[in-house]
Image (cartoon, rainbow, N blue to C red; front, side, top):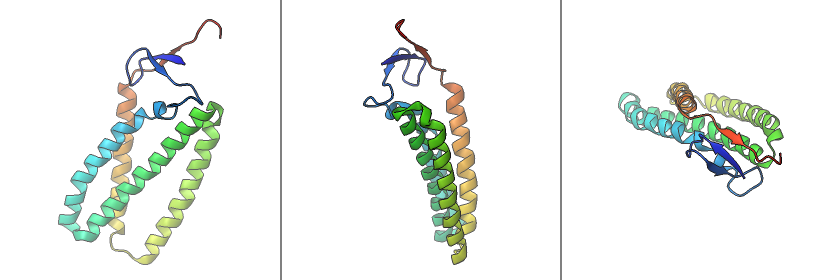
Length: 156
């Protein structure tokens, strides 16, 4: 195991290396704050949409926030998995995940738009808001978290 100083868990925490048990979980602390921020957005946005636009608007807000959260979770988990299995896979797994998500999202959004669903504008606003909230929370986490330093044994 490598010792990482200044991680999200504190100084001198033993982080599992790629392939060791807990390696994926050790690479996911950056998800907590954005998930909480999107939950807060839902707590505010859902009643507001229900009051302003009715049940259809509320459904659009839930769908939009949910879509963004699931999309970012898939990305975060796939990159964490790649890093935990073999760090050299991060770029290829990240790019394949991104391309696959874009195709599925495009097909899904085209199918939803073709139905003429009246909650689509609310969903679009919620998607934009959730992306801004997630990105801001992720940036906040990144700026507040100390950069890890790895101390390798002299044998390396």
